[in-house]
Length: 287
Image (cartoon, rainbow, N blue to C red; front, side, top):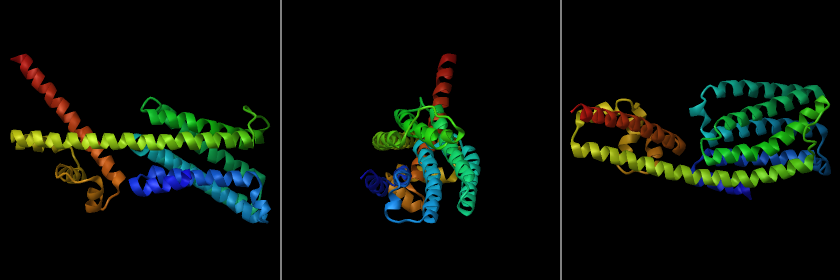
């Protein structure tokens, strides 16, 4: 039900966090089916099972990282992170292919280490942003239980020791807790972002109105000079009262991209307004 709801919310809000989360949950579900040996009940051969294991590992790593990236806007905060995680992603695919060809337990172990190392990197990145907002805190706490129980069961066990002595039941409990908690976090995040986006658009329109009322054309150009060409296009459409959906259709970009540009526009105009306010205060002080 959560997976289906995520798909519906994705098509309604056009937020990729819902799409990535739904596929991430689907890969977790498939992983539990494989662990429980459910595929054996349907007479699935070992070769097909191994192929599904590899495919599921790759999907788990890819969509988990894409979900956290989208959920926390990591590309704008840590743009270099993608380069390093893509390298790990390539190694995951290579180790998976070698395991499928050789059926060697060593490469399955390498695959496990790489996948959970990638997830651990993203979790640690979210820890760095823990104080940023409430939904980041929820992500850090909810993701930890399943992540560390899985590392304990699939990685540390192969090296002859365990920390949490977790078992499939504990991982399932962790998975259920994560699904429920993160589902509320995703919904909560969407509501916050919609309110923030509406507020920023309102402030941008007010900013434009104040310039027009004062008829300061020179100041207008100076204030907006830091905006890129695309940001200027979006700025003009915002002050015309157009919705994000209409703006995305006119400019042939996604709604999420529109929201990202709106945030950039707001921040750039805010910096300028603070500088101008500071200059006015200094001039008054001199007088």
